[in-house]
Length: 446
Image 1 (cartoon, one colour):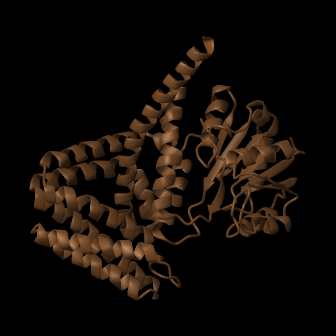
Image 2 (spheres, helix red, strand yellow):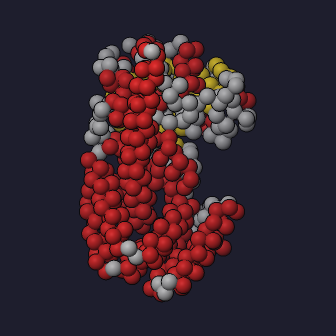
């Protein structure tokens, strides 16, 4: 397949902030694609004008937005290449990304699809954006090369195979979700050959917030993915579904039951609020030089202030004086980050470390104040989870250091908690849909 032609398809929706770097990188590649097709999904910004300066074809959808599954399908219908390479509009390819995709198909004519990963140098410096992109890189880099699914952020597929499979399920996934994973399941079930090419990497430009992280991970990924797992009756030990992650989620459920069994009202009130404060503050930290330490809008600032005020008032009223010390520590360091936004990287790194340490002291004080045995039990379970995920935390340590690792712990624990909850909800959604479909079939037969 030396004369292989690659069509790049980019779904676009209000992407004015990232589309130009995305397109410029594609046309600066060592291997220029045969054509670049942008599918505008009824954007309300100037994405169309930006795309018109670069792309070979622009497809303007009307009456939507319809979601990336629909947009990509329309792009493939207009493509003329042998291979369709899907690139998200907030992604920047490396100079050799497209060349390596081409080499994958050149080296194996039986290959049907391939996909890569984000790189380990995210452009956004805020902690949550760093954490989300780095963990995606780690998961994909640790995946089995014989892929059991597909990823459309930077994934390529033979156009004929894509059309034979019916493309992405645009009716089931009318908004950004797991349409690429679902296609991968169908490809795998049909016997198609999928290769996870770990040398194919791209840079992600997305800035994550706490709300977008939780909303996307829970409602757009975890719950629908669970329903898909039940439907396919396939729970692979790969990507986000590894054995270590399953055990970690189970241990978190055990820990939550232990907390509930203490029946300590003070702990039940203060712990969730302090946990949320931890996630909110850390998600906004940016230790990079030349930028604000906290990127907080007015609503977030008011929310953080009210949570601090509520925690101080509740802790004083409930006589949780041991908790007041680390809470004051976190408040002072957070205030320092807000009032002194600029400074050297070293100064910001120290401030970030102090905030992280303050939160861990706070959790320790809450647990020890409730029950010393609960505190010891919590520490043991945490150590077990760290051991189960030693490769992940080792990766974080090598890339960003120990304090970054410490800051990832509450986020990773939160991920395990909502993953387990989403598994239950997703299973319920699947069972409900199954019953509704059976009822519909019975009605049709009458």
